[in-house]
Amino acid sequence: MYNCILEAKNITKSYIKNKKILDNINLKLEKGKTLGIVGESGSGKSTLLRILCGLEKSDSGQILFKKQDITSLKGENLRIHRKNIQMIFQDSLSAFHPRIKAWQAITEPIRNYNHFSKYELKSKAIELFNCVNLPLELLENYPNQMSGGQRQRLAIARALALEPQILLCDEATSALDVRIQAQIIKLLADIQRQRNLSIIFVCHDLALVKSISHNIIVMNSGHVVEYLSSDNLITQVNDEYTKSLLNASFFINY
Ligand SMILES: Nc1ncnc2c1ncn2[C@@H]1O[C@H](COP(=O)(O)OP(=O)(O)OP(=O)(O)O)[C@@H](O)[C@H]1O
Ligand SMILES: [Mg+2]
Image (cartoon, rainbow, N blue to C red; front, side, top):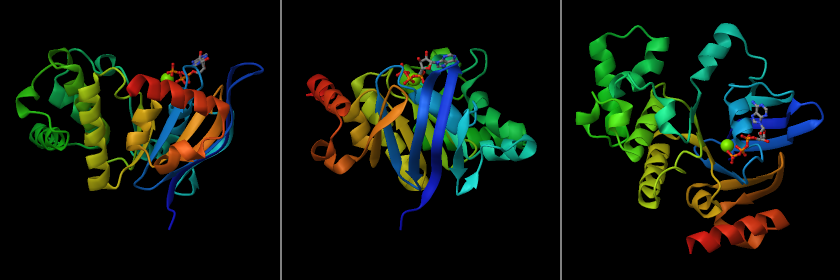
């Protein structure tokens, strides 16, 4: 049975009058599955994710989390809801405070919601480190004392700290080399299976998106131009823009 955890209906956003960055966007995310979003630079992918996790407001449209409209949540209800949807960004170095140690950084979201002792927070940090396969000797390191791949694991650990139901990944692997990218993708897929996590994975590279996603939407200039399932991606493509993305992507990767 199709179990939709997040739905966006007719989302529209403009920053400047008469210039729609997002124009009537509709999408559905299935529980425990990954929805990939591809589209060239400036097509509105990050704006859409920021709206989905409540960092920004849309001009119109609705976002339904488990069929409940979250667009109008305010105050304490919004604060409690924020735990459900967490985001991971591309630039992991700027996502962390340079003078906060790794274990403190990943338990910061927990401190915002609970009164845990230092001992409890440290044990939570160890649990999270194990979940993302980070060596425990890095617990006391600062973010700049870690490699890009380790820091991205740290970002995933922090996003998982509040046990969200949805993870939004905005170019979360794009800054990493191909081998580390593959490790992070595998890690996300493993965590997804363990926790029945739902993921939205934004990336320029259609081949990479295909490797992790169950369904894919293609965005161009603020519109969804195609909705595909990843298993028969090549035979389904109708839109000329998607064809050009496919060609570019396979040209680079094969
Ligand atoms: N805060 C803002 N104020 C004004 N314009 C913005 C703002 N944020 C984004 N934009 C504009 O919205 C458009 C979409 O930007 P967005 O960052 O969503 O694209 P993207 O698809 O994520 O691109 P990329 O692949 O390069 O990350 C761009 O034209 C951008 O300049
Ligand atoms: Mg972006």
